[in-house]
Image (cartoon, rainbow, N blue to C red; front, side):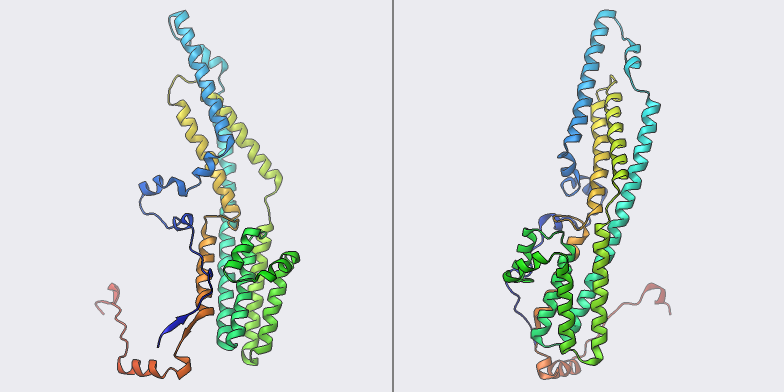
Length: 353
């Protein structure tokens, strides 16, 4: 007896390179040097970063020129020059502490939202697997594949923002939606999910027996509830007043810090400020990615969950085994003649028992 499969072309697309790099890296140094898998590329593309660093470098250069002029004219160093035009470091420390506290609270809230979305996504995909598994058991082959396709399509539409034209092309390439169905589903908007779930429920009610009908409909409704929670969580945006306050405090802090730290004779002042700016903008970028892990092109956990979901749906829909055709006689005969023995070593706590 063998397993057979006939998947349609393009059903399982290979994972992108940036998703493969999501694997956990062991060791501190490999994690530190894996910069391009972090948020550093997005941080370096921010115009605000280079504005503050340029302001800091220009101020530091002007201060060094003025210090050199004072040394040449007065045969010494004027220690009052920096103190007369500098920002009090006590004020900078207080402002930096406020900014760090607000930013840490913001990142914590974004991480909590990220965990909630991942948990709801896992439960929704698990419910989808359950319904597809039962459809494979209790419905005909043609009906189970159609039911599984509709179920997978509703799940992917829930996890796709928009969806965009590129996302629709991916769905067509993977066989979840036909070209003739794209335009009607796009025009329907959010109601398309309810139409597909209604089709699933009607198909199940038509072919499933009374013994399993209630359980299958209950799992469909559970999947619908998880989808609704995901959409409500994704549509719950951060209040503008809080985001505005956080942005203003961050910009004012970096503006004063770029000026105050430049009034120094140390050549390490600009590099240190550059690292501080990267840390602040890095936390902002990470918080934005955590806030919306369902965004297209996200490198967080949700795309990996989606790929695992597609592989499982592929197995449920297209893999066949020769056993049911012969009532599993060959497998049972082979198991009786050559029984499988599970060799599991006993834990250390039971070794002396």
